[in-house]
Image (cartoon, rainbow, N blue to C red; front, side, top):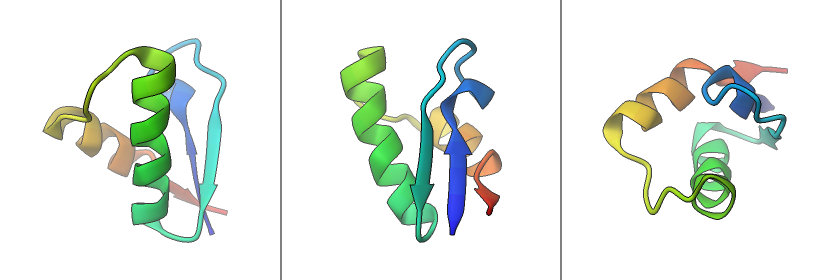
Length: 57
């Protein structure tokens, strides 16, 4: 199981994501970025930051 805390990348955001693997987390984060942060897509830099901050639980 993997976890990502959005606040590790976007200060002040308290959303956490749990997923079976990296791809599951990235899908969830992309939807969250669009809905809650107004980002139409996840660019390479943001994808790298997310990947660097995904942890095992």
